[in-house]
Image 1 (cartoon, rainbow, N blue to C red):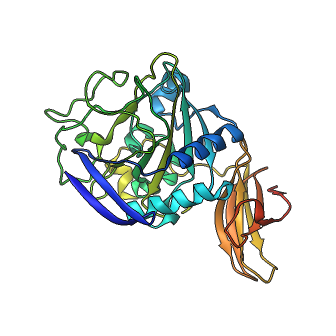
Image 2: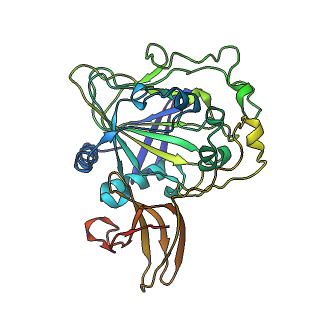
Image 3: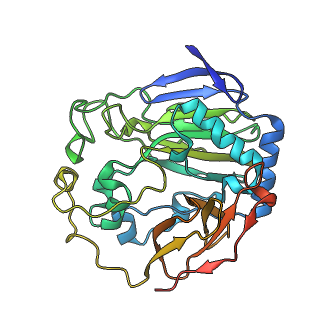
Length: 352
């Protein structure tokens, strides 16, 4: 089944429905050849480092290494890095019909020969982090997840490198419930071998295509059938791809601990309550004394890439909860919006 979507990048996008459980679509030629090459060039320019993510409680306790799950390298690309990145951010919003403020920066990925990412979900299954209160805060108790994933294929790969959905077609357990450990499994919904690419819906890499899938049901409950993996790349080949995650709320929305939140019981929280105050916490207030609005940017501690946190009107303020030694600057966008033409302040470092 195909559906035409008007007004995407000044043109029409054609969504090919690949699956309804989970909801997966493919859009071919979403990126031009020149755009894919520019995104790959930016990744090389920024430098890539080993991919890491949140560790589930059981794997943390076992001392499992991140490389046992994923072996790619990654870089983060913010809109201010290039007009192309900013243009694609807006195009994703036009495709999903969700405001661009909900989009995360681009996570660029490079997989070499034999590299992979075992099966995982892009939303937070809270019961797997039952004693990690900060995960519950960051996910707003399950209400600030990655609603959708728009996965970019930046080059062709002759062998391997597919995105696979191993629970494709499985039933939804207790579809009217709000989820929780008791709804993880039912007849016909068994979890697959997380390391295997032998069975499931496979979407092969095709330069310029994107794969769009939804990680949540319309009810707001996470979709366990959205489990997916990156299959090993063939011999002497490289796969370039990128994640553009679309969150339920604006991506920089802050969470807080809420005592007796219903999700604590529903998902089996086993911690002792709110996390203790972080000695490295660094609340900071920025005051814009300029006569024009500015953008407040946070600098990634590894890559140095800026990420926009807020816009501050002339004479306005912005309060942020940060951490010791995190760095910031403010930027006045140029006529074209960001990039090398933007006026920037000095870098400031947060000190409690």
